[in-house]
Image (cartoon, rainbow, N blue to C red; front, side, top):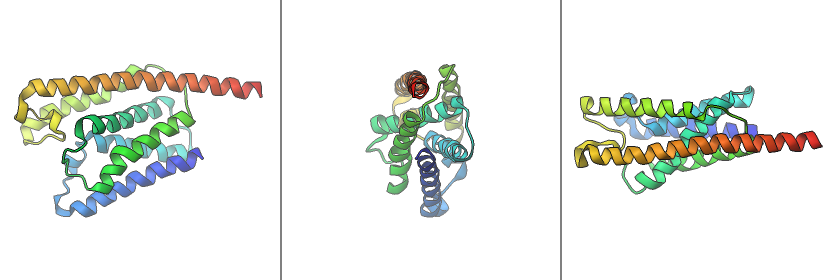
Length: 192
């Protein structure tokens, strides 16, 4: 069951990526495409899922993928839903809704103990710096809440604080839930 779920995650992300490349055609710009946190988190989740079909993957890496995907889903729901981010419908549903849910479900079904949940915050912090430095240079930002041109850096700061809180809370929650559920599962197995 877990391996089928992991393969489904991989195939869904792969299908959405291929779909985007085909539908966008000449408008597909690889550098901008891979400057979306949504794309980066989905690709990581797909790679982790595929590897997990064939061999054990570090709990820390799995946990990071879960946090990034859960954040992708929540940020979409609270900051991007209804905003035209120029993602065709199929890819939008797969990358922002379906895969985030599947990755969280997979974590809950196959929980693992993790340590140092705060290390998962390094990648989003690096992504934020990359985006805010690159944006003014190329005149493009991946998300409206990160674009200071419309409402200034105060608005960007508020959006980034919200997302940071989401990352911190989810990182702690994923680590805590994984550890507690793994302990419970281990105790149940040792009793039987």
